[in-house]
Amino acid sequence: MKKWMKAGIVAALAGMALMYGGCGSDQAASSSKSSGKKQVAVVQIMQHGSLDAANKGMIDGLKEKGFGPDKVEVDQQNAQGDQSNLKSIASRFKSNKPDIIFGISTPATQAVANEIKDIPIVGCAITDFETAKLVKSNAKPETNVTGVNDRGPVEKQVDMGKVFMPNAKTMGLLYCSSEVNSEIQANQAKKHAESLGLSVVERTVSSVNDIQQVAESMVGQVDFIYVPTDNVLASSIPTLVKVTDPAKIPVIVGADSMARDGALASLSVEFYKSGVQAGHMAADILSGKIKPEDTAVQDPEVYEVIINKKNAELLGIKIPDEYKDATIVE
Image (cartoon, rainbow, N blue to C red; front, side, top):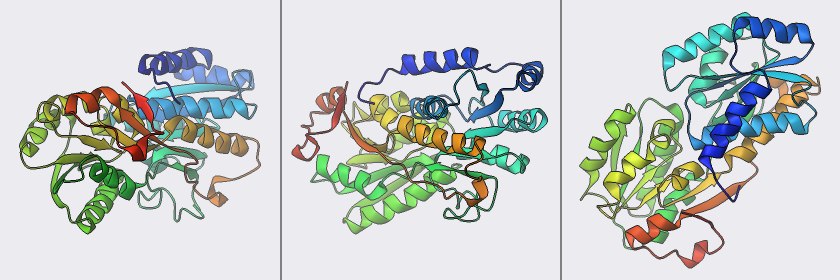
């Protein structure tokens, strides 16, 4: 997506909730069953640009394969970042027995997969299904879960920091300690940064409330900060750059929405297109063409360089020639 309108995505999701059946009660679910339409249940860990885009992509992917609002009703649920909400949503889905479940993010998909073993689950915005114990192997899940990973090129993302800051000596590494996805990426990033001769200052947060204080602790210690694809950080990029921008510290990120929200740059999965890809998989499951237990987890098909021009100008950084074909946002 060359243009990004967060408000548009949010509005679109709200529209989908109404058009497809929305976040209604159990009575609505019962009505869906009697209507003869397929029931699609969606659980999202929290609201931020990348996950919203994946959500919309999933529904659009279903529609492209013939499962539009005339064929399906969708129960959209958002946990608002609360683990107890995820458990309640999983119990709701177990009771309602939809035909298929979409899990958006690792925690959301783990919550429904732990509770439900007899309904197909298609995940998206998940770095490693196998490490998250959602499948026995990414090549052959042998569970009721499959989907599309969001494994970005972590090494190349770290390289971006060196391209923007060729004289950098120290990289800051910031992520949420409770997210399996983030830890996997952080370990990759640290190893690669050290191979480039960079020292690494590693910091973690447990919630959005920690971000400002932890970011302040990195000022004066790092030349740039790398943040992997991380739900907690992705939901609070403005809080992070409120600290880093005055200190002239570039922030390189793993998700496109994070760059659009104020970080300097990302080399990222296009989450909308990954969502479409997952929606196609779900349609094939609903059609009986494939089964999740036999269907390999797919890699994302599209990556995109995003550079925030406004942030680059604020930091006094010239956009390197290597990224002359990047998508520029402000």
